[in-house]
Length: 187
Image (cartoon, rainbow, N blue to C red; front, top):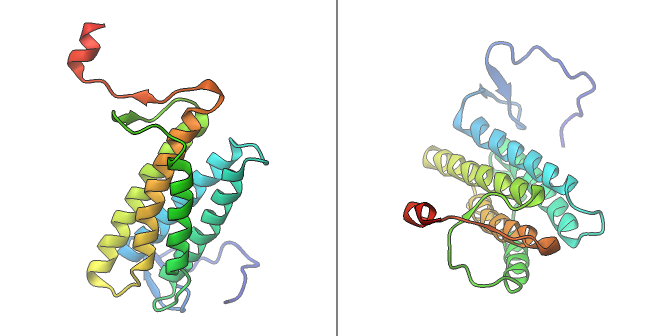
């Protein structure tokens, strides 16, 4: 790993460029930086969600592991050719997704973000995750990147949806269901 920052302001980005982990410099609005930035924002959203969970909640420890993996994914994108996200990380998400999903009733309606603060933060993280995934897809069009990161984000957005459903139902809560306009007007 490179040098740790001992001085936060460097002035090297004042001209609109930023450094990658390999020492090269690119524009701050380059597709690579957009993808890394969205992954960072996603990581922040998950951190906010974790603040809503009890420390003893098993989901919190699972989400902390996700945060580690997201930081690694950002690092992987920051150093072209570097490999940190592997198939095993995707399988771990799938296993957690299956465990959470088996406790839920079948989905019959569209779900709106809400229900409680934790579920809402989870939906926010899900929507940011989908944007991060789109940014990685855009990046992959013009740059060779490993496919594991894109798959990880795709599976993570599914996990966050199922986790939001789970969280909305806690403490006798319920999910917020979308209703067609005609249904809403009949009430």
